[in-house]
Image (tube, rainbow, N blue to C red; front, side, top):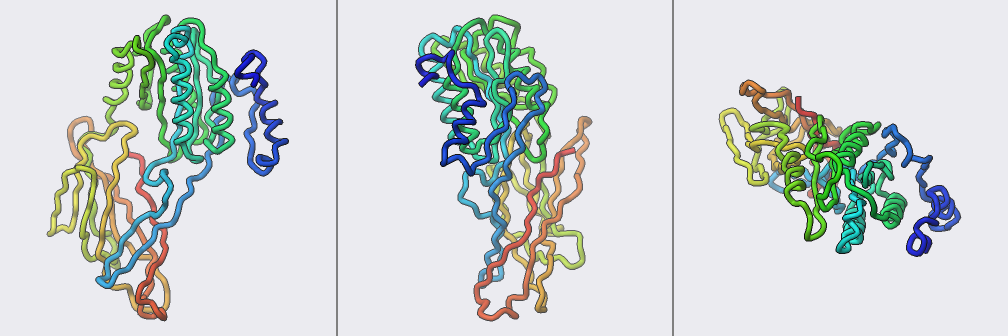
Amino acid sequence: MSMQDKPEDRPAVSEILQILRMNRSYQDAPLLEIKDLSMDTMFNSDEKPIPPNEKRPSLGFSDAGRVSLEVANSSATVGRAPLDLVVVLDISGSMCNGGKLDQFKSAIDFFVTKLSPMDRLSIVTFPNVANRVCPLIAMSEIGKFYVKGIVDGLMASGGANIKAGLETALEVLAGRQYIAGRVAHILLLSDGHQDHGDARGASNPFGIPIYTLAFGVDAKMELLRDLLMASLLQVAALDLYLILFRPNTPDDDLDTIVKVTSDNAHQETNRRLGTVTIKFGNLLVGQVRKVDVELLLFEADDGDYDYEADILDISVSYPDSKGIRHKYRAQTLHITRSDVKHREGAADHTSSSSFPALEQELP
């Protein structure tokens, strides 16, 4: 109520958390430990990420002896890396016009709803100066509650310094303690009006993608478009190839690579070498490509024991700055196999195995 009627009387974060601790429905939930984080000038207070809710791959054996490897999970987080998102909000005076402030509050509510607990979100606001009002926190139910409370209490006034807002967001991501396996993005919500500096001059040495969302019929689309295109044009790898081939081990179980499916990427098969090459073209910063592979394996070894079988090698290839193409070391994929004939009633056998994802950083 205080946020709606008298924003200046809204409770402090510590008071909100105390109210939650007194609420029975939140007593067993892990609460955020907030210590004046909005005033912290060192952006290394990011919350420890919540691990994704992963399931082990399932292996379905058919009568033909084919093996289908697939990570089965109904969650929308399947197939993507955990996200660290910094939302940069324009709360300058121009956002008071045409209901733009209310529009971006609704947009943030939508974004937050779509995020999963493995994702983290931070908020940076800017009128004349930039301020990180929320550190990178996991999007658990309490994290979402906290973020929505901050956004609901925002008011617009003053000039606009988009450049400072973007630079602060980049500092938040550069200062993270937890970065392994995480994708970083910046989302700018603004009408593009700026009174201080030029946002095009914001230094982005790590090539973090910056996306823009314009508000208002008077939005400065040229500036917002320039910021977006400068981000999208940052290429992580030129002319990228993904190469699938037989493991370089004497006892691998691979018979044939039956089928490879990828999103509109050209493929070349060398039957003599037993390789399949997927040609993706250029890979942009933050871009993800998905490949599905169907394999035909030899019959499992006789015996009453499980064993680790090499089934596929994967490598990447792309040219260096001089145009010379290099092939980088392969990652071998393994599964745990059993001799089905030695198991009673094993006409249809399903097993689980460790199936590591290819998340090797490109050299």
